[in-house]
Amino acid sequence: MLLKYIVSLVAAVVGANAAAGSLQKVTNFGTNPTNVGMFVYKPAKLANPPPLIVAMHYCTGTAQAYFTGTQYANLADTHGFIVIYPNAPDSGGCWDVHTTATLTHDSGGDSLGIASMVRYAISNYGVDPTRVFATGTSSGAMMTNVLMGAYPDLFAAGSAFSGVPYGCFAGAGMWNSQCATGQLIKTPQQWGDLVRSGFPGFTGTRPKFQFWHGTADTTLYPQNFWEDIKQWTNVFGVSQTPTSNITNDPLNGYSWAMFGPNVNAILAQGVGHTVPERANDVLNWFGIANVTPGGPSQPPTNPPSTTNPPTTTPTTPPPTTGGAAHWAQCGGIGWTGATSCASPFTCTALNAYYSQCL
Ligand SMILES: *[C@@H]1O[C@H](CO)[C@@H](O)[C@H](O)[C@H]1NC(C)=O
Image 1 (cartoon, rainbow, N blue to C red):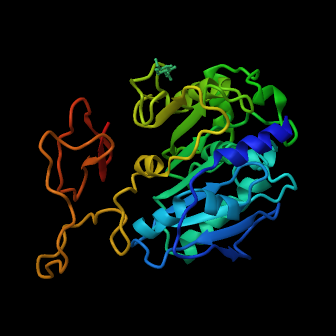
Image 2: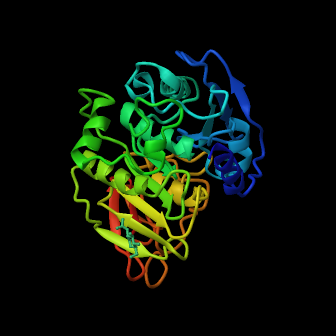
């Protein structure tokens, strides 16, 4: 099983990045009880302030492998955000997603080391604390689930490729066959209670969460996709019936189900372990696809001063006839582009700064 897992994972991460710079190792970034490695990609020109993506590798992977195997670093050059690639301390290269410490806010485990990296980046790199995101593949997707539950105060959104629900590996060792094979079934309430136990007393806004899974996954069986739906719809208090489910989106055979604005579940028909990362879709979900180096990562809340006219030509394209395309921005504070969407998409407000054609 483990060998199969390794082979399928190496094959699954495709598309080398062509980032201009290199990965930097950072030490002494704060509390790090399990000695997680911190590797940072900071593009030459940052947005002001820069958003942050924490990108987490699969079992047997490394920070370096995820840096070269995904598109986040060269997209960071384009958009001016920072990427942190944590490196798992475990000899098998998997994340600790099972101990009570890692599953609980500020209690220890690998998740605390990662939380310290985020806090360090906010304090030392000027990262926008309202725009911190997590993504990952397989074990990294499981850790994304863990971070959503244990550190909802730090993250605005997550995107997990082929993972399992928060707490699904709890109590086991590094591997939990019952969970992996899709035999760990809980009620929505039980799954939701697990997430709420990750940070008892937390009353703030929880990160919105998107997860991807293949129907032919024989490493982390697709039942985990359905358990994830139970879990996160319960956490957000929404129905388990999708508010929309678009077929052949974003690829032929995929279906993109939404359960309101905070839970998206994308099922990839016939895809095994793992669903390849779709970095541009992830940036859209995070609401940072329009961020530019030097530019604000979100529009200013005060209107720009008229005594200092901008020296650059606006880059916003004119509204297209027929409305903006699927996933395009269509509104929000400071937005001057098209506000209608091409059929059959609807302009949907995700927050005050960002509306999207969904
Ligand atoms: C969305 O629709 C597809 C195609 O009918 C289906 O296979 C999939 O299970 C649906 N997704 C959800 C979350 O219900």
